[in-house]
Image (cartoon, rainbow, N blue to C red; front, side, top):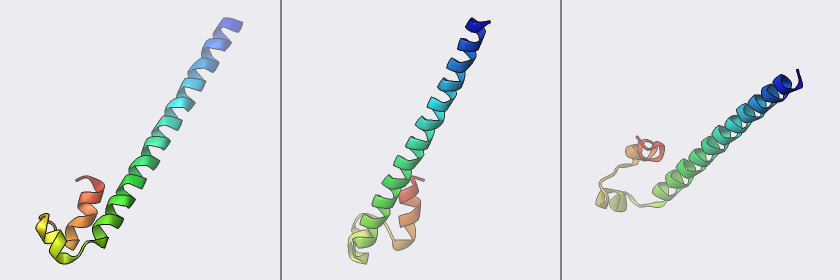
Length: 65
């Protein structure tokens, strides 16, 4: 019986590890988008035009779409 219980607890621990990895990746992606958004908003309209963007494109670019 203990072998079955140990296998089950390892699977549960692996599941929690996957949740942690996903949450960490989501937080990193959110932070990257936040930084991109901030930096693009600091540019002038002329600078945005030079790189082929408008203010309306900032959110799309920050989300990576």
